[in-house]
Length: 307
Image (cartoon, rainbow, N blue to C red):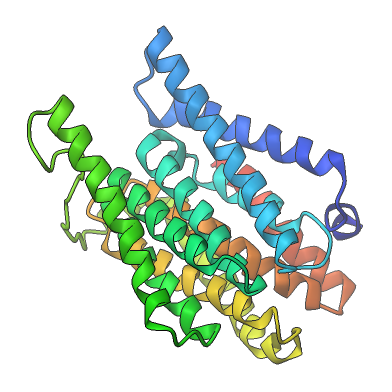
């Protein structure tokens, strides 16, 4: 019943997603931030919400454009559910913006499948990931995603392997120019901060222990079937599925090595993980198990709110 409603593309699904994103913002403001109402802070949180909701719509576009699931909105419902589960992600505008640029880069990377304008797409991907790293340094690791895609799409031209570096260089030049104009130095805007942190005490709470347990168990279980079913996918779309899985691995690495662990670093994981879990839900044949599996992920944030 639940899956039959939400796995079909309907306007009500986008209304639900919008409502959950808005609720996550209110929880983030009231429980996880020192919010003092003024024009600047109100505009900042509005911009964060807008960027976050656009990220959800971008995930839907990426999935539909690259046939990463059947026609439906399961992945965006899962994405918004994850947001509501860890609303702390909305307290860090830099990570929200960085993730948005990573998703834009992912869109360009997956579009390599069409065999058109490769040079432009590779340049854009390198530029966008460079831009993402300006706001959150460790998002630079997603630069590896470009070369994974080139490998999966069997691109052997050296020129194409070098183009992403030109895009990254363009970002550096713009950032250095901006820094010279406004900060009177070279590297402040680049935000180069390669500090690794392995202090996980911030996760020692009911919320994070529950969320990590659920995401880890559901994610690993879904990933097994995701990889197992790769051979069943159309050959032209198979590399796209592999790129999404690599993105999930990179996001997990970013989460682990993040110096500041306040929950916002989970945001990078939400998009690829929601696509992977959505694919698994589509393969479940037992109707009762599909309902329980999907409902558990949708109900989780509301259960955590009552704790």
